[in-house]
Length: 138
Length: 397
Image (cartoon, rainbow over all chains, first blue to last red):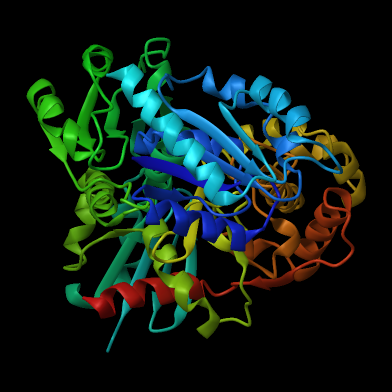
């Protein structure tokens, strides 16, 4: 399974980004890490170039709220059926619950949303979603 | 060793005879060879063919069409490699939009097809073949993923297949495409009848001038008190080239081996491209304020005088900086606020005074970036960058 990952927007939380990369590799993913300070367009283009199965964006200071709004528009420019779009980290500026944020990010175009969720729990959910996706495609 | 170096430009040619520089305005009514013989026969007679080195940017310019699957990887990487190989004229097509794309009416010198890392499914299908049927091109090269090679090779005549320029970590892999394009560019320049004849006075390979300048950049610090990141602006008669440290690039997802990139403003020159420079200037929202600041009015743009040439060169500097600033999106966006040095070279260095250059750069930084401090300005008045570049190449040989 191929995954494109990185930190969206003007966010330089590189430690979390590295931990995500290590965890993904441990789980057997082929990882394309675009690093910190990455724009949404670059994520989408990297998914196209690598035929990734998963795009996993992280955000640790709530920047994703502003930077992810064009996701649906960008997805509409390419055939990205079968790719899972996931986002995780601290997804709001100020206080917000998972219940409040999930509908918002799903409306942006994400399939899976993890706000302040433990990394391994989030990756377990992603693996389940990828398996289910494979079954549907098969 | 006795050495004579000659640079043929679109407007001037210059000579460097063992460190003594001279510049000559070209006579467009006769060939370059005859012009050189008329103006420098005495000089030429002092050197044997192996002591003469020539580079040229005159009459050059391959037209290139790049077809890629994404803007920020395949198209960006191939465009970058093409510019660094000396190519000036580049059009791009995003493959997902190829069915809506117009077919070029002119002959394309080289088509570059690129997309995808190795090890994934093919990116190009019948849509590409159908599109190419209507394109009149002379060369075509595929630098995308391995999986597509057989299909494209079967369906496209005379297809050249080179190493994928997108590496397995999404990094740029430029060597093979760069060499291929550089050779095409060289063949184009040296194949021109005008330039071919110059082999009567040299036994060395004739190179393209942008290639020579790009080669000098990693060693620029040996010539000038220049600090990274820096920008080199070469305002010529037909085009203006900039060469810049890749550290200046906004949203950088590409690293070239030299750490320096080149961008060509193909219709921004003070002689052959004068009309388009004036048009570009008049379309700029700051131009009247700028002319007022320089103490002239817009009529100067229609004059043919030394004063008008100075103003046009100042405008060219302003427009180039403006077009790579955050105010403009058509070209690469450079972080000009972190720029430490600006180096000016080319014909501009023989016309503008330090005061003229200082004035226009101060205007740009104050008006566009709201900065009072400006980068360190260095003017290459003796074409030392060109001399260093040409020596680097011939020494390497």
